[in-house]
Image (cartoon, rainbow, N blue to C red):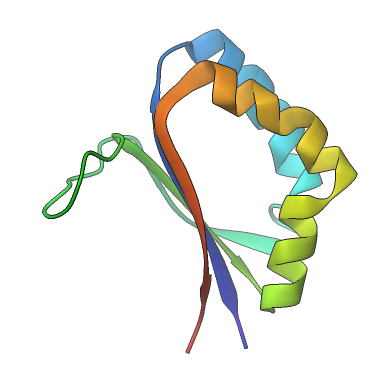
Length: 97
């Protein structure tokens, strides 16, 4: 069953965010073990509490693969760059249908 990693945030430091992207793409296997489904820099929030303006959605073949990619040492090493570069951030792992 597919799984989705959904991340939402506001970019506060574009240079630091680009550094995060350089590390995140290979460590999350984007284009190899995961697929970029959405990359929206102008997310339209229609409900709920404050969310950021940027949303990224990655698809994995399973929840286990998504969890393993997120929890990998390599990704955990670059993750602080996203935290430093963004605000109003959250991440979700969602089971597909």
